[in-house]
Length: 301
Length: 120
Length: 159
Image 1 (cartoon, one colour):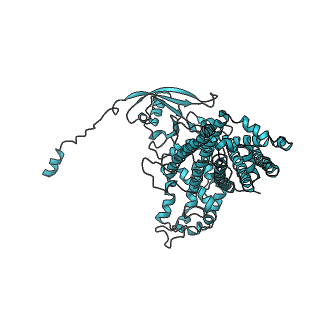
Image 2 (spheres, rainbow over the protein chains, first blue to last red):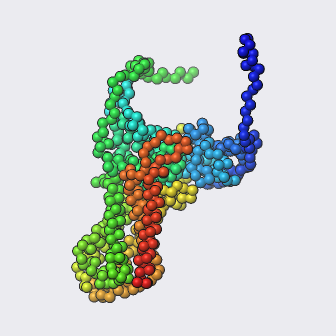
Image 3 (cartoon, chains in turn cyan, yellow, purple):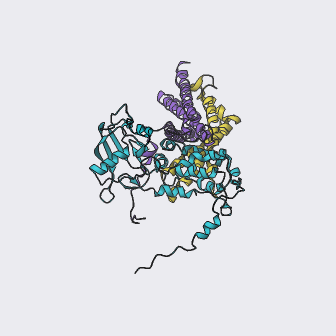
């Protein structure tokens, strides 16, 4: 080894000073988690159960619930996945407001009792886990995919869209389907057939997407007695959204399209295709590899 | 015959605007347009002059028409949100439509009675 | 799906009391929505009552009793009836003005433009002009209610 490398090895390790260690190495206090419990086989209706949870400075609601599950009560059912606010699994109602459990700091709630309830307006499976199927079925109803007659004919090239056209709907693509908006909406509280803020916002996202030609189909779905018009702009959906998607904005714009621009949107020609085909492997080559029939499983012995 | 919900709501918005204007007129005719304010405005003489004058009677009739539509469509919206099910929805739609009609005809009878038979 | 087909999970809908009326810790527009519902319901029911009140005397009027109107107005010339009318006036003004705000929002006015959300992900429609309009209309409602109070109480007693 040369002399300069030896010198580098003798360097002191970096000094790293954290200015405030309060609540980082030791818990700051104990907080009561009042969790809604419900076992469909045993209980007639949900009830609250209290747990003492030690809380550090950066403990989130999800950390608290997992602490309960690991140390106090393993029967607690909790849905979670990424624990960083991108999957939307841990959506629940904490202290009366819809939040993602992994993104809510316990100490920021300024309360010694944290009430955890499942999402509103969705069937309750167990404890704080709800059935998201009604929510997802309504999303499916608005056909959340690009619709145009020449989709298959132009598989090998992109459709042209300007940055301005992209900006019109980009905000709405951030939706993580967590269900917080659906839970917060006052209309979904009584109207089972209401499509819900998420489905309506996604309907708008696809209608206004310049590459899409399915405006008429979607207009007929949202312009119904339990569609767009049962929204009264309470804005609770946008207030609850953890990603700033602003479904209330989308729904008001959708109403505007229905009132003033219906014909124009239905007759709008979708975005033209690019002249250059996609670079790289061609569609024909990929399609050739796909077997016409999936191989059948091996016969049982 | 299916009326689109957007048409129903479009008329709801327009009647709402009309009600704002005519409502202000109704309030005005009962307060500052009359010498002596609210108490004088309720005297029989003043009231009957409103009913027998064609313009005022027309305004009242229009006010009633707009209100019948707007109020009962509003009730219909709240009731449709409250409960679902084909029986309930159909019953609500029919009942609110009939109620609007009844209310409109009932009020029109009054206006016409006083328009034709009002004695100063 | 692994769930049995016979499983029926409890509906868990919040209903009117837990849904329409649940406004504590809620955003401004949700309060305005609740007020719009309540004022609309009350004024709508008042319309029916008002029509019945003024139309009920028609048969008596037609059969010759020309004093019936004056008698009816006399029986309604008390403070309680005037207070009731004041409330109806305030409710009607609020409902109308908030209705204008809702119509503008449904026409795309005052709800802002699409943005690229950045932390803390505040929604654009809840910090746009429609919120200022909401506050403005509440102020106008209070002013016009004060004016109605003037007309219904001050003018009737002191002019």
